[in-house]
Amino acid sequence: MAIEKKFPLPPFTEETAREKVQLAEDAWNSQDPEKVSKAYTVDTEWRNRSQFVNGREEVVAFLSDKWKKEKNYKLKKELWAFTDNRIAVRFEYEYQNAEGVWFRAYGNENWEFNEHGLMQKRYASINDLPITETERRF
Image (cartoon, rainbow, N blue to C red; front, side, top):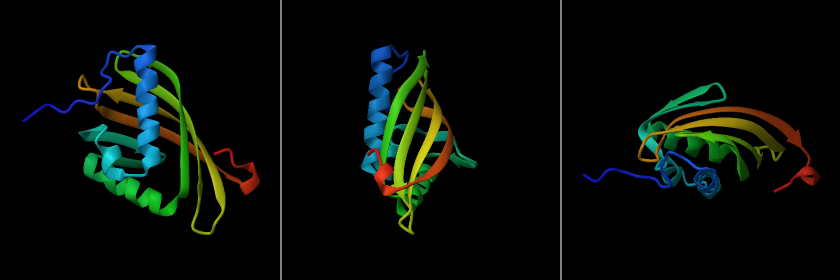
């Protein structure tokens, strides 16, 4: 069986860290849970707000549920810092809930990758702010 790899691989440079962040942004904006899950190890560990997610199967279930509730989702990620196999990002995204109310979510993520470029740990802290449609940025 071939070893899964997700380029770019650590140790990261500024260029490869920025590339990894952009690839993550693009994948999440696809709103395809299966595609997104392939960037993570099979036993990945997440903390997303107060929820804990473990393994790719739970990632797919979590994201499927997320994008059923968060309509018109659009995300922007920005590299904050990096070192060998870790990247920190800040992000914001906008979405509309089932009642049609718009929100902008702000947050930070800390990522840790294995030697094959798959994310093994993801810790996200996120806050939501209700916004009007005229306040949308994306």
